[in-house]
Image (cartoon, rainbow, N blue to C red; front, top):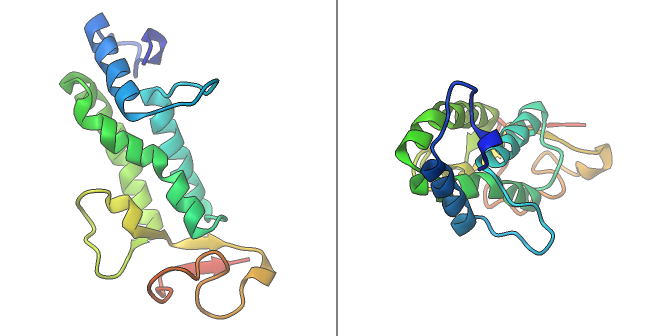
Length: 158
């Protein structure tokens, strides 16, 4: 997180807080050569953008959703390492995105709705697919590996 990465104009983090955020992010998010380093803002923006996509109708397969959830996994890893004031300032934003994700998804059967990595045990309520990808009334192509029948709350649209 750099000084231009603060949440609001009224909130000014100390140099020590910025250093602590940078250290937390460096310890959790790894980037390869030439890759852009993650900031707290970029992780929250990625999470929000994914939730936007899920709300509108997720058009990728189950393994891709697992990949897309890396931003939320990174947030979970970095969150306890952040200075308490930074967590307090950003918690409402994270909570709001999480609430939207819960509304746009349905939980896996027999998995708790809370707890560690709860977001990985949820399925988008709306899956958008190409017409030829729907072969039966169950899961569409790319989702058929799910270990349970498609819940009635999951809509498949073309």
